[in-house]
Image (cartoon, rainbow, N blue to C red; front, side, top):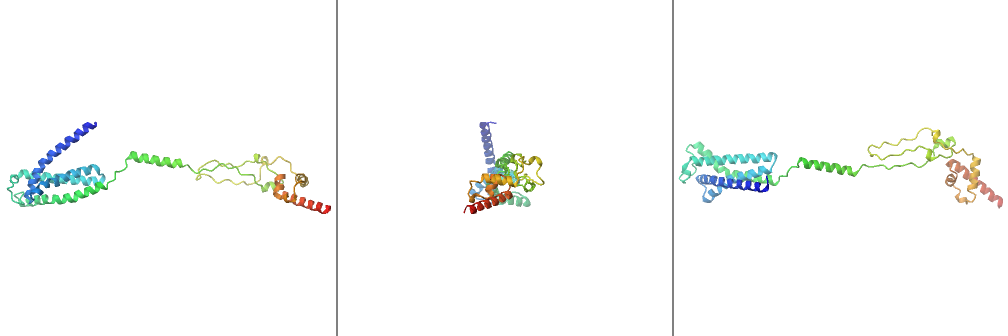
Length: 284
């Protein structure tokens, strides 16, 4: 249905409701006069009853859940009350000519008391129920639809995924002295030939702890360079450190120059220092 058809339908509904209200207004005004209302109050009485019916209908269209059920109950109750009063107006012709006694809507006393109670309680009920319905409408928050909830959930999941999981960079441990190699008399280790552990990027929660090297180094991982004796190391150290001052004769410097272990470098250092002190004493 296009916009023009909807507008025409709403306009026709307003016209029908307006005419129906005019018919009901005449009956409710006469009933109000019969229960003691003055001219102004009698003219406003139909708005109290039928007006609350319209308010309850709008509230039922806006509200949901229990609040909507409450609005529908109010609409049904006031519709039934308006129907009863219009019916009484049709049964009592004296109401049309204002010749009926005050407070007299039926000949049978119990029925008259019930009708008067109904007619007089409707304005009070309009104040209470109308205020409650307006408060419910003003405090109503429309529920989130399934499609919107699904899109919000997808957005949340996407945002969480875009944050990324904590990654661990690839690391290759630097060569360190292996006690087993030193004990076996191996001077150096070819780093390229030694299998090292490479940590691949994985989630931090799933990353396993690195395995510690245990046992002896396999033969394939050992250096192919022949083992040098202490005499060979000392001769090579004399040649390399001949131009070095005494201050540079440190264990770390000799170890890096000879590519040997720290223990052998310290032995070579002490030997070289002793030789230089002996040479200095001989010269003096």
